[in-house]
Amino acid sequence: MSDESAILSIRGLDTSYGRIPMLRDVNIEVLRGQVCCVLGANGAGKTTLVKAILNIVKADKGSMSMSGEDISTWPTHRRVQAGIALSASAAGSFQKMSVDTNLKMGAYYIKDTKLLEERLAEIYRSFPVLRERLQQKAGTLSGGERTMLAIARAVINKPRLLILDEPSLGLAPIMVEEVFNIVKQLALQQMSILLVEQNAVKALSVASTGYVIQKGAIVFCGSVQDLAKSEFMDNPVM
Amino acid sequence: MEMFAGLLVSALLLGCTYTLIAVGFSLFFGVMDVVVFCCGDIAIFGAFSIMGAYVVLMSAGLFNTLPFIVCVALLLLIGALFCATLGLVAYRFSIKPFSHSSELMPLLSTIALGTVIKEVLGLMFMPAVNASASAFGGEAALKVVSGRNPQGFPELLFPNGGVNLRYVTIICVTVLLLLLLFIFLNKTKMGLSMQAVSQNKELSMMTGINVSRTIVVTFIIGGVMLAIGGFLVGSYQKIMSFDNGAMYGAKGFSAAVVGGLRNTWGAVIGGMLLAFVEVFVAGYVANGAAYAGVVAFVVVVIFIIFKPEGIIGEKTVEKV
Image 1: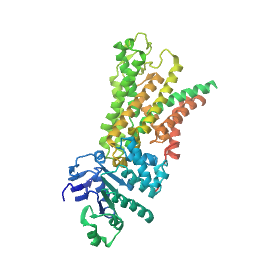
Image 2 (image 1 turned 120 degrees about the vertical axis):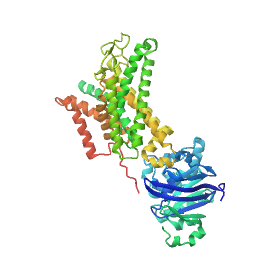
Image 3 (image 1 turned 45 degrees about the vertical axis):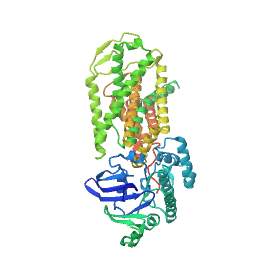
Image 4 (image 1 turned 90 degrees about the vertical axis):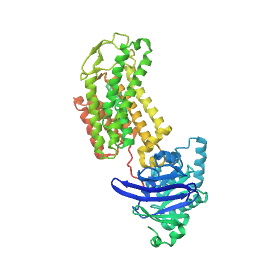
């Protein structure tokens, strides 16, 4: 695969927490305009992977490039500025800030106030739930609303790569449905998405390529059709 | 009634001095989750650097050539510069190296740094303006005293305007400074980043906030607050000692705890509450001056037992 078609390519990534190794030799490619999913159980290393992509967890080894450009040495804020946006509902929100301010913090690098207003208006159109909560403190939102806020906070940047870390985490089935409808819409807009999930059935319904991560190593890599037929799907909720 | 009014003014003034130091504590705690125990010493260091710079400016004759207000501004700038530097030193050498170790480490190392600052002041600060010499216009009688002796703080706030004008200025300066801080925290990108880092450091990183730069800026701004706090302490007390830092540090920290450590406005309320308790106990209880400090700290203990999150500190429980 040429680097040009891949928005993100990770090669030979190793990370560790202290002396305990977490990820071993992880290779992942996210193609432009496609949804790529990484499936894994609790503790498999999904969140570590996501944090390593943003350099919040430091890589011990390996390289990372974005559209062919090597970003391995870039600090977190530079990667975000370059267009990687992470939405992790587990990371919570800025609780004491209003929903509006939370979104503005998400759009940290949009300097143009007019553009910011436009983007906010767009967000409120696609996330009507948030519009009703505009001035409410983020800490008082319900679980579903907070997931919406987390996604909106990342999407407002129109990122080159959107990383969704377990958007279905802790949500009622009806909310999971709603969240994945949004993911589908984003996919239709040709946004490049790396979807990290435990809920395999849902993830496969939107993704085109899939990876399976177990104990910090990638054990499957291929199209979702192959993944759906593989032995990993015997237990669809990993 | 007259006594009451007098006490009210004293309490307000004392509250102003506590408040700015407490704000320093709460700013630092916000971004680092660490109680920086040398805040009081940094503030006193600021006051001493203003005193030192005053002597230098005086002997250079600048007070006779430049307008008085320009000189005062210059002195404040020098004090702010010193404290901001010291704030950065505290962050770089006694907090950051321990960011991955136990929480106790930065606590101990900032106490150690506070002791270093205090002893350096005691050793190094030799030249002083004779406190009895008139500060403005008169002859500045330079003499050398040991740094361990109490030093006279120069009268920089309306030396000819009498004591009331000075008190009004202290209160106005505090209010103005807090107002500026409020605007900075809520209206500027850097201020909002500081709040963001304080509320959720990991999410701040994810949103692309340059967390380490935000922390550095916080320590600079906290240092400036402490410098002006020290300046007000000096202007109010008029006599400064190199070891005042421990007491002001303890009061500032207590004020921040009473108000809610993470909350800047809590620090203001806590500082005022503590000052009011102290002053009114000293004023109304027989022989109260001896117990004023004790009662103030008892209030702190009561808060820690019954309302550990402080007056306006919210309990940090996120709805799941």
